[in-house]
Image (cartoon, rainbow, N blue to C red; front, side):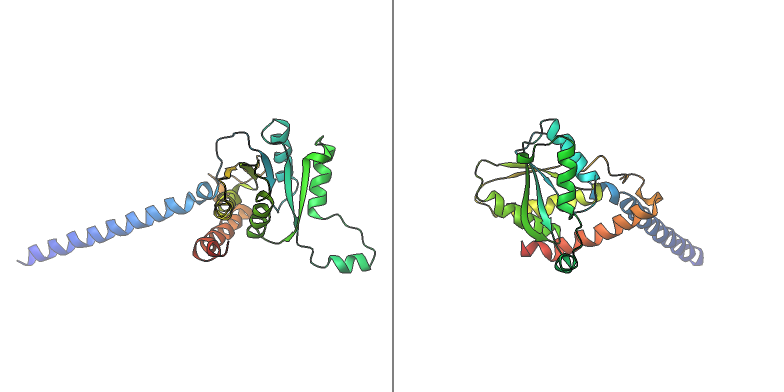
Amino acid sequence: MMYTKVKTRKSKFRKLISAILIVAISGMVYILSMGQILTREDELKKADVIVVLLGSIPDRILQAVDLYKDGYGDKIIKVETEKIGNEVLIEKNVNVALQEEINEAIALQLGVPEEDIIILEGNAKSTQDEAVKIRDFLSSKPEISSIMLVTSKSHSFRAAAIFEKALAKLDKEVRVISYPTKYDPFDPGKWYQDRNQIEQVIFETIKLLNFYLREQFWL
């Protein structure tokens, strides 16, 4: 009888350890795959316009220009960034190019005609702000039914989700094609080997959760 009880306890203990190991391994696999989860790269197809999101320079605009030159979009669109403290700079006669101006200068010097670069007024400070401004722009452009979204790799899944949610309120269907910049050094499969990329994954994961739990209901 005693032997049977001991054997039963050992069996339960082994099952518990096995269950813990399975959960731990599954959790580790999920964590290590976060870089790939956060990166969304759709099949490359022609879009009506190319939308370059706020953020790092020059990797995003470089990709947008490549796509434009390869015929994957007829226009490059950018929303103005938030101008915190810009009035003070003007008062002090400090002339500094804003992010959208730098992007425009890069595109122009790479051969994109000025008439094919559209900068929307916006004072945007987030991807949600950009999505709303693009939605407002598209509401008066019935001829536009698809956009190519260019951003950083780790930002691409969340950005596409935000734009799809925002554009769903239009009275027409607009297809979102996500194509993150190839000039971004982020490695979806080995992000955990680089400190900066680890920070990107942590930051983006938190913001993605925030989008699904809160921000999507405000768009």
